[in-house]
Structures are given as structure tokens and as C-alpha cells.
Amino acid sequence: MSQDQIAILQRALKREKAARKSAEKILEDKSRELYAISQELKASNLKLNDLLDEKSSTLKGIFENINDAYLVMDLWGNVLRMNDVAIDFFGYDIEKERFNVAEIVYKDDIEYTREAFKKLYEEGAFNNYTARIYTKKGDVKWLLINATIVYDKENKPIAAQGIIRDITFIKSLEEQKEKILKELEKRNEELYEYAHIVSHDLKSPLRNIDALISWIKSDNKDNFDELTIQNFDLIETTIETMETLISNVLEYSSAGANIGNETEVDLNKIVDDLKEFLFIPKHISVNKLNKLPTLKGDSTKFQQVFQNFLSNAIKFCDKEIGIIEIDYKENQEYHQFSIKDNGIGIEKKYHDKIFKVFHSLNKREDSTGIGLSIVKKIIELYDGNIWLESEPNKGTTFFFTIKIK
Image 1: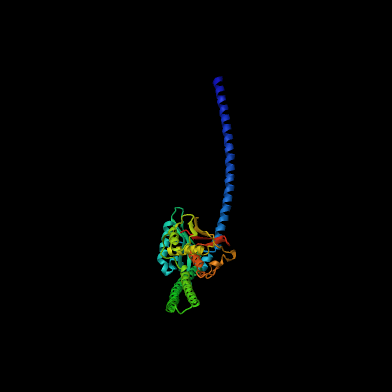
Image 2: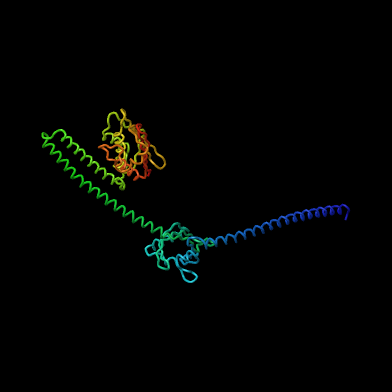
């Protein structure tokens, strides 16, 4: 072998040694890196195991200490597991006896329950399902149930679990409330009928008295002196006041009745009709500052509200130029109205009293003190409120709301 060939082999051997040394260094570095990673993974696994142990302990504590009954059952209704609350509530101990939820459903709820569990299997869950069951003692209980399906690793349903709350007491209260409301409705109807009967029976003799007085005056017009005629006129005025009072009492008794004959009511037309119907002196003007809405409701009751407000504003105007302004605005929940006048005004201490029955601040023959009480009942019937702002000798603004449907 020549010297050149030996030199070539030596250089190749040298390069191979250098490459092997470089490879060994890379392998050593990668080994250190892999070792560091394995140590990190080992530490992470230890943390995960600790966390799983902690969560398992927590879940077990929740299962045992939850205030509501909790149970797990197979797809045929056989209970596989239940907490202490469920054992105490249902009265069954699955360690000693068989317990199937399908067998304890109340007889009238069986079909309803089948539909609910069909939904559970098809959709995987149901929320706030209510039904009645029999406990082992034979007691009937109302339940509120939230349930979900349990799936295996292949996403196949294998069981169902549910949290169950006893709502028997709540249902009992609801039934009592419903019974009371029905009884109250019945009593209101009886009172309304009674008010009609009393109204008719009271008005009939008053009309007879009025007719008799009219005949006496007519038959003896030349025999009575002026004072006697004045006394007869006073009796007729009193009779008219009494008849108006009876009508207003009847109107008040029916004001809080259920809303009937609901239609689309244009309040602009209501106000315009009242302007034609009511006697409005020439020195008093009634103005709408904004277009009023069309609301669904009882047109008669809406007319009663605006008629009372306008009548009072006209009646208690003491200015040479009377101004009545009707305004309207809408927010997210309510329609808000206002009726403003520049009349005699109302002192602050009377602002609450004027809405009470028979409470009239100004004793007048044409005022019974019932009008604003009727208005308040109607407004409350529409879930609204009524209030006022007023200053004596400057005027009054009544505000009221009607809830948007």
C-alpha cells in the first residue's frame, strides 16, 4: 500500500472518529433531555394521582352528604346505588331488598312518567320533572327530578342517575293557594251580585220618593210658600245625590273585577269622546301633548279612568283660564300617562288619603269621594301604579302606569 493510500485511510478514520464522537455527544444530550422529561412526567403523574384521589374523595363526600336524594338505576328502573337521604326518603335499602322506581309511581302519573323517561332515554336528560310516588310506608310524595343518562366508553347508555327533591310541602301550599283563589273568586262574584241587588232595591224607593215629591209639588204649587218649595228642592237634590252615591258604590264594587271584553282600545278616541260628552266650560281647554297609544283592554274601564281625571280637573278649576294637559310616554315595561291641571291643588298631607273610598277633600253635592278609588282599583287591575304631584293654588298632575303586555 502506498503512502498516499495510507494517508487517505488515516484521514477517513479520523473523520469517522470525529463523527462517532459527535454522534455520541448528541446521543448523550438527548438521553439527558429524555431523562429530564421522564422525571417531569413522573412528577406530573404523581400530582394527577393525588388530584384524582382528592376528587374521588370529594365526589364521595358530595354523594353521601348532598341534601337531596340521589340514586343510580339501570335502564329497567332497578336502583343500583342511592345515598342516605334517598334511603330515608323512599324507605328502601337496596342492600337488603329490591327497589324499582317504575313500581312506586303514583297511579295517575304512570303514563306521564313513561313519556318523561322516554324523553330521558332519547335525549339523554330531563330537567325539573315533577311526579308523585308512593314511599315504602305508602305515603304519597311529590318529587322534583333532574336526571341524566350514564354512558360507557363506547357511548352506549348503561344507566341513569338523578337528583330528587321532595316538594310535597310546596305542592300542598300551591293547592291551598289555588283553593283560596277559587273561593275568593266565588265570594267576589257573590258580592258583585249582592251589590247589584242592593243597588236596585235602594234605588227603587228613592225613585218612588222622588216621584211622590214631584206630584206633591205639582198638585200644590199654589198652596206652598217659597220656603216650602226650597225645602222640596233640597229633598230632590238629596235624593239625586243618594242615587249617585249608590251607583258609585256599585261601580266601585265592580271596578276590581276581572277584565272582560278585551279589545284594541284607541285612547285618543276615548279622550275625544269624553271632550264631547263632558260639560267643559269655555274658559277651560283640554289638550293632548302627545298621541296616546292603542291598548288591549276593557274600553269601559279605560273610559272610567280618564272620565274621573277630567271631571275632577274641570270641577276643581278656580282659574279664569283653565288648562288641562294629557301627556304620554313609554318605557320598556310600562305605558305612563299624566293629567295636569292648573286648579286648586292638593296639600301634600292628603296625597294618599284621596285614593280612599268616600274621602273627598272638598264637600260638594256632585262629589261622592269614590271616583279616585275606582281609578286606583282599575289601574291596579292592569298591574299599574298611580301617584300625584301637586301644590295648593297652582295645580295638580296625576300620573299612572299600565303594564305593557
